[in-house]
Each structure stands twice: as C-alpha cells, then as structure tokens.
Length: 149
Image (cartoon, rainbow, N blue to C red; front, side, top):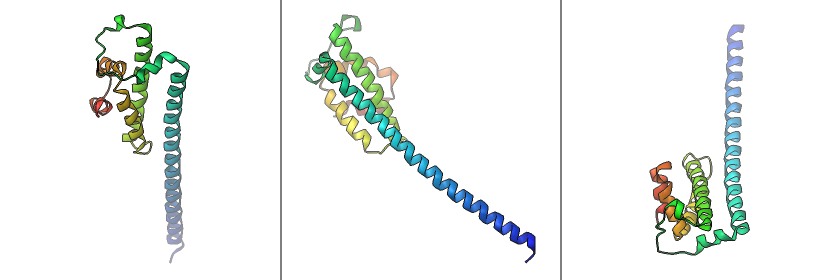
C-alpha cells in the first residue's frame, strides 16, 4: 500500500476518534446543563417557600374558597395585591419549568410536581384571579395545564 493511503487512513481514524470524543463531551455537558436547570428550578421553589414563611399575608393563598374575587386591580386590598403579585411570579416560574420540561432541559416528571402545586393553588381565589389577569401573556396550553384538575 502506498504511503499516502496509510496517511489517509490514519487521518480518517483520527477524525473519527475526535468526533466520537467530541460527541461524548457534548453529551456530558448537556447532562450537566440539565442538572443546573433542575437546580435553578429547585432554587426558585425554595425562594417562593421562603417568601411564604416571611410574609404572613401570603398564607391566605392556602385558605381555599369557591368564591371568585370580583374586583379590579385597583379595588384589591394591599394583602390581596401582595398575594396576586406572588402568584404572578409563581406562574412565571412555573412556565419556565413547564417549558424546560417540554424541551427536555430538566427531567420530564419534574413538571408534574410543579403542576400539582399549581392545581392545589387553584383553590385560592387570588390565584384564579391572577391566572385570568395574565392570561394573554402565556401560552394557552400552559395555562390549560395550570387550570386542569
């Protein structure tokens, strides 16, 4: 075999090996990124839990009521506004987790825990009010999941 053929074969093997190891590295980095995304979601949950402890007016979100909150934003009390803004932030974080789950940036089952929390909060009139208030800002499928029982 001429020397140039051996050179071509060795170069081809080198390229294949480099591509193989690059693929392994990309896969490892993707796995690390998914884990970081998962940790970001957990950090958001912890931050919301801390707020719930620090702000007693937020506790009323877990006082479930079938009555609807029939007020405009201006008519809301200061405590109701605090709960509405908490819910607004929570919905935004939930959308981030929902999207990350759909894109497989986090484990698929992670969204189910968040969804269950949102469904529990559907018992709160402020949460339901907030879902209506921000309805035009979010994906329709996401909002349907937030409301489903």
